[in-house]
Amino acid sequence: MKRITLFLMLTLVALLALSACSAAVPAAPAEEAAPAQEAAAPGGGTLIVARAADAKGLDPHKQTAFSSFRLLELIYEPLLGLNETLEVEPNLADSWSWSEDGLTLTMNLHPGVKFHNGDVMTSADVKFSYERILNEETGSAARSYFSGIQSIETPDDNTVVFTLAQPNVSILAAMTNPNSAILDSRTVPDEDPSKVANGTGPFVLESWEPDQTTILKANPDYWREGLPKVDGIEMRIIPDEASILAGLRAGTIDWALINDPKIAVSAASADSELVIDRTPALAYHVLQLNSGREPFTDERVRQAISCAIDRQQVVDTAALGEGKVTAPATSPFYAAPLDELTCYQKDLEKAKQLLADAGLADGFSFKIMAAADEPPTAVAEAQNIQAQLQEIGIETEIETLELGVYVDRWLGTDFDAVVALNGGNPDPDIMFYRYWHSTGNLNKVAVYNSPELDKLLDEGRSAQDPEVRKAIYLDVQKMLTEAAPWVWLYVGYEYRGMQPYVKDFTPMPNGSIKYLRDVWLDK
Image 1 (cartoon, helix red, strand yellow):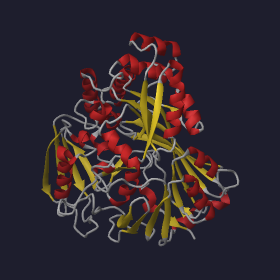
Image 2 (image 1 turned 120 degrees about the horizontal axis):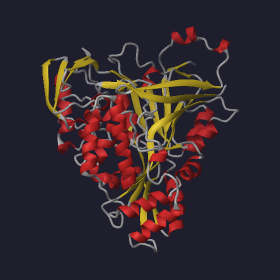
Image 3 (image 1 turned 90 degrees about the vertical axis):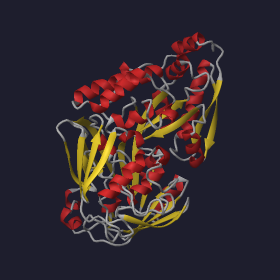
Image 4 (image 1 turned 60 degrees about the vertical axis):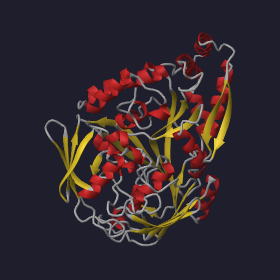
């Protein structure tokens, strides 16, 4: 029986409480529900997993590619986690508390957690990990999240005290990120994390043949009792997602991460027995313009491009309509109304006038960089944008690159423009600060900042009232779409395909597959 699970994300409450509901379409008949049978889930077996793109490295503090996260989150863990409704929950820290002034955060660690090499995790490892993240020489992707930390104290092995320069309500969300993983202070740097994986997660890295096969085995000392339920995971890299679907249909693959909407729609056909989870995503598709290069240094040129693009047409053409035009913030609570944002309706006359005002009435040309495999819609998005921009005299050349080369070029700001898929988060500070604040560690990639934007982002980080924060981030989104350093396009879906005998996988709107730790094989 085909079953499509749909998580409908509703609204963010208090700090990060994003509620969600799920429904199965069509619903299973009552006689098939059998909750008592699944309660006695047996363990064992190897889960055969397929995906199109491999991790680009093993150091959790440095990776930015989604494909890297999908491996590393099975090996490493951060202090806190997000549950299936994107609420912050305990993880390596059992509990936390704030001082009355909001400047001191005390974390109480889960006792007896072991790294894969047998070392017991202590507060010293947490202190080491966060100091490594904060060290600019590390090149950590999460450094901006924690830039307000003034000191880290370890009064005992299971207590960590963070002292902040100013209140930062988003720091808890930041502590759920794979880039905030806890490393073993006794082995780093003698064992380079880019070469040796030693986490606290449910699976141990046994072997990794890049772009081929990854073998994970169950962590026998995992601190969550009874998990993981399978003996291990064999993760196969199959670049062609049509071949992944063929493997699912043939029964040679148990579970697959699907990115291409065309493949997902085909997999969910009426005659299929496969289970396809389809979850609204927080990650967003975007056209990034390099405001440091001519002619994008001129705001009018960037605005002209924004005004010339019909975003819904991009969704319909590249993703079969499997998506929704998005504001810069993607969580429903914080997302700005589209009719309040600059040029969210296509306006060719305005676009042409803006180009004329910039002295480019005859148009110009530039290159759009796209990754070949993340996301699989990238080239189609670039092609549709290419066709639309021709209507105002702008010619583009599309550069299609292997993902590793693309990431290196992107991080080096070596592009005119890129089509990208960027991670979303229920807290807008996590989405915006590192890109758009002048001190953000990815601001060099965003290539745009302003004193007014810095002020708003600092206010949003410290404001504690959700409605006050919502108003602040509405202004942030208006400012960004007016300046148009990027053209925000749409959010799509997270797709996961599996055999009917794969039980208890929980999909996540942020794309995480950490709940493979709960999966068992009913066969």
